[in-house]
Every structure is written in C-alpha cells, then in structure tokens.
Image (cartoon, rainbow, N blue to C red; front, side, top):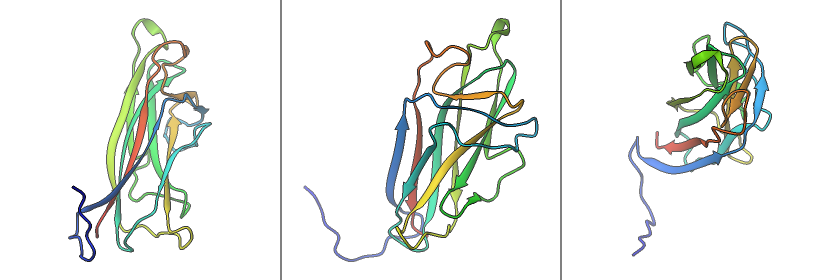
Length: 172
C-alpha cells in the first residue's frame, strides 16, 4: 500500500529526497599540476542537479568514480563545485575534497582506481529559478596529464567501468 502524508514536518537530519547520475561514458581532461589546484571539467561534465523541497536543507554529495591516468605514479584529485553559485564547496583543502594515488605495475599505464567519498554541503544558497542547485565533480591530475573516467589509462578497450554521483536533500 502507498501512504500519503498531507501535513507534517520532517525532523532535522531526515532524508527528504535522493537523485543520482550514473555514467558509463569515458570523458577525459588534460589539466592539473603538482599542487592539484588546476581543476577542470571533464569533456562530458560529471554533474547532477537537485531541487530542494525546503529552504534550509543541506545536500549530501556522494561520489564513486572509476578513474585512470595517462601516466604512471599519478596523484588524481577531485573537487566538488557548485555551478549554481559558482563556488567550490566549503571547506576544501588545497588539493581537493577527495583524491587517490594510482601506481601501475611494470611501468605501464593500464591501471585504474576508485575515488569515492561523501561530503555534507551545509545550507547552500538555492537559485530562485529553477529552485535547484547543480553540483559538478571537477578533476585535476598532478602532472597536467590526462585524467580518464570509467576506463584505464592508455587503453580504453579494457576496464570499462561505471561512476555515480548521488545528491540527497537532508532536512535542516
């Protein structure tokens, strides 16, 4: 049976809604530096918008990214970016919100690794029209080399994987 709630208030911390974006696409970008501060959008942006139902909601961002690199011994960095307000989600350290170090055996660039994590975006400003907020995952590669999503480094034939971004509205 389905239940309908006609009136009520959900307590703080209650999940009000969940939206997700799943991709098997293989976008890439050549960007970054050793400090991990030159973040860029993937060639096909990895992002999702949510339209909160309450004004004082927080947004829980969860990502799971399967990534590859064009070089061996690569630092791969991820930044969570609020496209609606043109701002990095606070608070980010100098090299991003998440990251990983990928090594490859025998000096080849066929490896891939997972970058994942959750981040609570507290009390973001919601655009008045269309009353939504869009979160994008931007990336950096420590040497300015190529950062790949859903595939291993120099060979897209193998390591075809899936990445997700999940946004949850949390009652404030």
